[in-house]
Image (cartoon, rainbow, N blue to C red; front, side, top):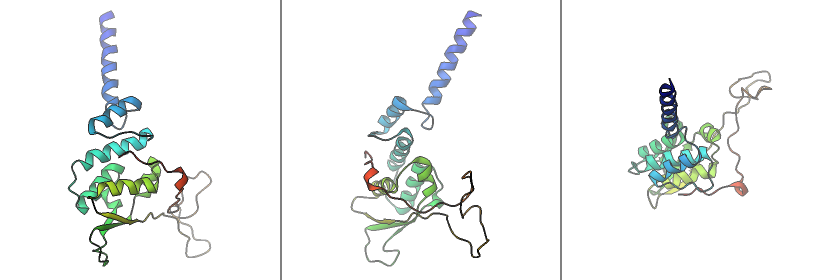
Amino acid sequence: MIVDSEIEQAKAALLKTEEWRSLDNAKGSTLDLLGGNVGQERGKSSDEIYRVLIRGKEALNRSDGTINKIIEVLSVTLDCSSSEINLYSLKERGIDEPAAIIITKAPLDALNRIGLTPAQFTQIVQKTTLAGVRVDSVEFNGTFEFGTTAMETDPAAGFADIEGTTGGYFGLVFVPSQEEELPF
């Protein structure tokens, strides 16, 4: 019986260790070790943002710099669908600048969930592009809209209820004085 108890304790410790080695569950110094494995520094980043940087670094190491790969890297980094990101070269948009891109759709809900600011997201986008390619602009579109009549309501797009469980969200709030430079 004593041996069984010790075996169960050892088994529980191994399971916990395995769980914490998962990027999604790791915290603190364990997360720092996972970041060190891919050469990603933490800087002042929270655990949640550091996970984003680690996922991004892993995806970036496999990227070839094409638009489709940039979208793939960003969707893996933010843990969202690639359909939530639209990216074009300015040349595709009729502007004669071949070494610049524009993001016309960015996953604002993913940024809000993670706690990543629009400026930090733009830093990630810039790091994901090839050297010499400029990020011209990033559009952050919200879901808030007014109805067409005075009494019309759409629970997914209009004003929130008292609990805040429904309603749309505005596009962008940018506070430069609170920006933390990400450690690339």
